Amino acid sequence: MMLNGKQAIVYGASGPIGGAVARRFAAEGATVHLAGRTAETLECLAAELRGAGGKAEAAVVDALDERSVDEHAAALDRIDISFNLIGHRQYFGTPLADMPLADVEEPVRNMFRTYYLTSRAAARRMIAQGSGVILTFGGYGDPVANLGAFQAGFGAVEALRRSLARELGPYGIRVLTLQTNGIPESNPDSYPEDFRREVAEHTAAQTMLNRAATLADVAAVATFAASDQAASLTGTALNLTAGAVVN
Image (cartoon, rainbow, N blue to C red; front, side, top):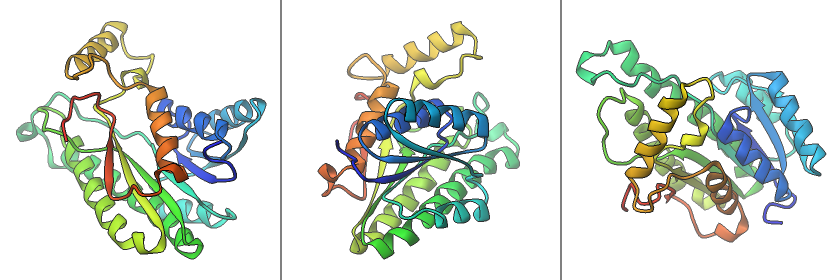
């Protein structure tokens, strides 16, 4: 198993992407610490993973709160993998020139804040260990109109990831981004079916492969990135856009 004996934190584990990653991590031998805001959802997922033979612990953690993140991380024996997959409020459909400042600032502030807090908490433990992997999600591609400051938020996270990779590399810590062009499968069932289908078709049409990345794709690449098989990879983004973004 690729992650046998590893201790992994998945922030936002109650969401579709976080859940998919957590399931794959557990299947590959990691003890998965499921962190999120909804205790019932986290406990259900933990029970599912244990029922499938995996190891999982659930904890209510506010990934935007400094004390909550630090206390949870400090209580663990060690941290080998940290992956932040929490969702963010989105202001799509309005040109930037027409948006209030508060709506532009919010995703940038919150995305940078949570990635910094969770990465810092992991890094402090990993430095003492002399090893570890910090994964970020989303990446930064070509500009798209009317996404508010969502891409600016990802750009801020990418700048942080590059700085962390440079500073933490000497301690044996790798920092990577999983770059996607959107995961249509992750759209909530509460969205209208026509809207979800339109998003899926639009996302696929942007790619070279005529398909969008799936939850299974994200989980598989995350597992590889977190494993010792990717020991030489750091400071870069792993492109899961199916050719929508060309490096």
